[in-house]
Amino acid sequence: MEDTARPSGEAHSRLELTTVFGGSGFLGRRIVKHLLDHGTAVRAASRHSTRARHEQVHGGSFSAVKADILDQEQVAAAVSGASTVINAVSLYTEHGDVTFERIHVEAALRLAAAARDAGAVRYIQISGIGSNPRSASSYIRARGQGEEAVAAVFPNAIIVRPAVMTGSDDAFLTTIVRLLRILPAYPLFGSGDTRLQPAFVEDVAEAIARLALGASDPEARLFEFGGPRVYSYRELVEEISRLLGVRVRLMPVPFLAWHALAIVAELVPGAPLTRNQVELMRIDNVAERCGFRELGIEPHDIDVVVQAIREKSRP
Image 1 (spheres, rainbow, N blue to C red):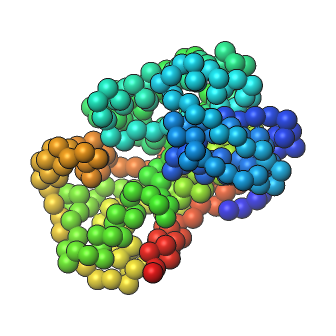
Image 2: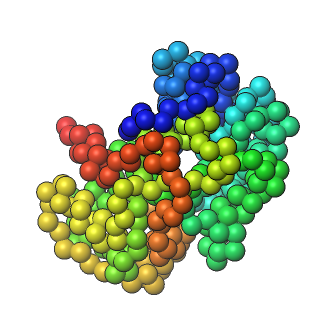
């Protein structure tokens, strides 16, 4: 990652506190680390505060608090005294009364309002590329409605839309790698034509850290972060196969078959496949707005992640 555009507010960051909700998650814990690397004070708010443990880095100070985004009192306590609040809470599979609408719309609205009431000057909402309040997909619709809800109570909020994020512990590339290693034929979603622009999670975390510290144009309210290359799903699988040094036959599977399989899979606790995931694989996931380069970051391609996955899986 380039260092050509360090945040203008970094010199003052030691005096400011940033609260990161979802601070123990896939993206959230990395945002915390990058903020600490910049020397700022960070409070990681999570339902599982013991998972969010970070040592002081370059003078940054860290604290972890247990806070459920659905608990208004815990939310208010977690944002108290923070100049910046980041919502990195995400939900990809609904369970019981924990729905996309409840997490991505209602909870996001309450968190933004709490940040405003606590006197925060900056609020960053992590959403996703393709968010649309009128989408037929309940997940995409909730993401879009959440953006609107946040903007209504915190007009200066920054909306961040990452493409599908990758890392050595992700649920996307690691699954492709595992299946390529064990299957004689790899099942594609449809014909594999859906376009994807995978973003390295460390790049996304650094970008968000820079936004939190005031690196962007003050008028910029929406950022989309995608990697350096756009792949079709077929091309992505082929490239990963090449990087792994394995040969595998690609097998198109109709979306109708995937949908039926997901219905069955959802009967199992912690379903490995859901109808929502199948629907998302029908839709292009490509950045179309300002992003990494506006923040002085040169994004990494998937080879970095595949190499990390290979090293992690070595005995």
